[in-house]
Length: 215
Image 1: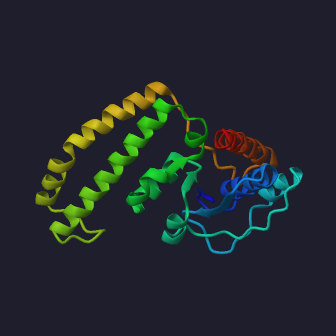
Image 2 (image 1 turned 180 degrees about the vertical axis):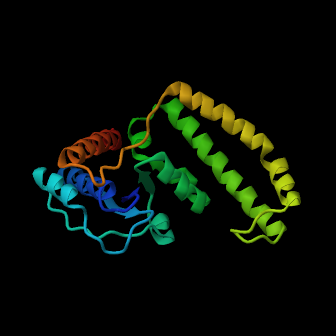
């Protein structure tokens, strides 16, 4: 069974719609897939937004939802983690660098060409490596997470990650030239029309993913 976790900010708009829409496809296509959703800044137990619920009902989907904060157990549970924005993805990689190879933006996973995906994956591995170096420097100098770094620690950090920063600059330039837009805009506080547009964007990506899975 393939286990999919959708992640957004509050787990009341985008990721609940993505979860419900993928469940619809799973049931219709009889796929061996389990799906959950969570939010990086989610409260525990909040309902989906009124507009999200309305848009899903318009699609014939009754989805009872209670928001869930992202946690290490959910990250470990998932085979693939699909985020609504590149910022969400970067946040999860920062906190769970060991899971870097299974974290994608939804659009990246759905539409990214092989070259684009390769560049994104190279960047993800680079950021995970930087995070490991950062943790090692903090440990070496016995620094707390929120403690200012002394000059010696800064110099040690730059010595270790200097080549990585140069590689990051090269990869970001390459990605910019590809002009690949990964983010799905947050409709929070917007009109029902904005939620409909968001749901349409999400469902197009999900349809592309299901097509890939069936090939």
